[in-house]
Length: 376
Image (cartoon, rainbow, N blue to C red; front, side):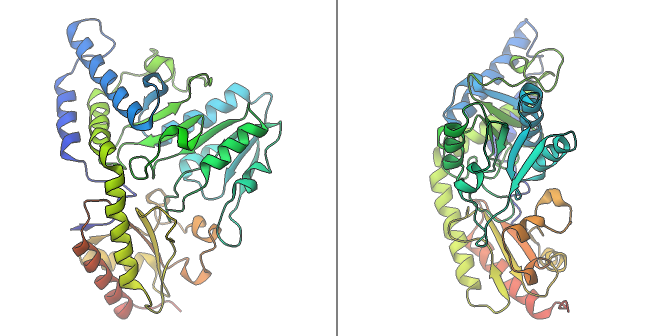
């Protein structure tokens, strides 16, 4: 199997599997005061420290969640609860992941003003396009770091810095699911009050994520109960998955740059293999994350190409895994030519992919282009 759908989920690394098993063996409740509970609590404490170091933040600024969707929902609905009586404006983009777009839409249906900034004619979102919308009524600005369908990297540091200069009370949130442990950065480089991250995008298991909450920024609790996670996220912690998440981060953190360079070389190899091929367009430019590559094959339906590649044991996506086959609005927003909108697949890499994987994929893609039925 050649797996090229790493933006959807990644294979769990051996270190994470081992750490999960250690967590399962340590079955005590972290809130219990006896030895078994304290052992579980220590695992969580150490894991929190590992992830905090990777982001360059304080341990207390990390809250464990079940996934990045929960992290982002916590921020968006929490911001509305905290400041929604005084400020009613939310600014975001038209290319956000559904975990951000849908809760914002829900708030809009309850009376909040939502400004969605679209890319310009070149498919670019500039800081000025965001900040020109900020005023004294702005509650929250939520902008992703790296787009999950094309790898497009947004200028978040400049955006959030300018937002705070204009309106210090405005809260800022960044979805870093497709960039954490892939692009070299720390939380200070992003400059957001809140950052959402996920485990299963970086070789940890599904069902675990985290939320960075900047010290001094108030956010109401999203899940109420026993007061776990400093009162932010009640519910008995999943020691096994937290330990696995930290193990994956601990493995990747020292080699983020090395892995980035490896994946960049694979992307360049793929671009060279497809260069000049009529009817094939790579939508992800050199300034995009190398981990996500959007490719259009003119007049061949993306789902048809996906299943053809699957017949060759090559696994890609027809877009965001969360879209479940629905037509992508992100591609049109990013000014992808209309003739490619129904003919685009997403190839998403990891550093474990090989040059041979790229060769096999390129050959299969060209074979499919030559033999599959064309749309009229």
